[in-house]
Length: 106
Image (tube, rainbow, N blue to C red; front, top):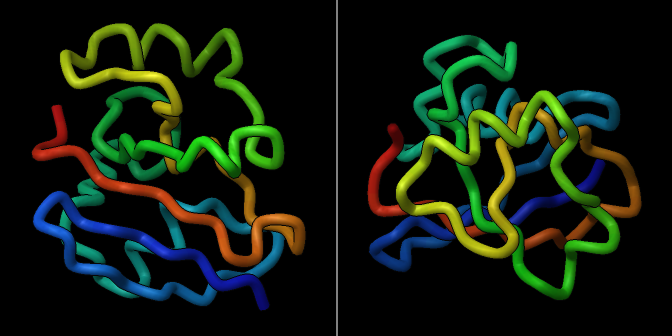
């Protein structure tokens, strides 16, 4: 089971065990991680599960697709490595993934 490292804006780090095939957002919500609001429940329609993927992991995670891009574009905190965690599907190649949370979700 892959372990994901989620770092809150204040520096608090959480190790989240995630099931292969589930979204990073779902894994975080199931473990009640503060900072992943997930208002739309994972349908890529709100942007409240925004994360910053550590640059070393971008090749494994991949870039945002055409549906995710508009949600990210609306976010004033968007930066290189921004992704919606509902669009990141956990698999064994993401074991050890590091993501950081923004100051707030929009």
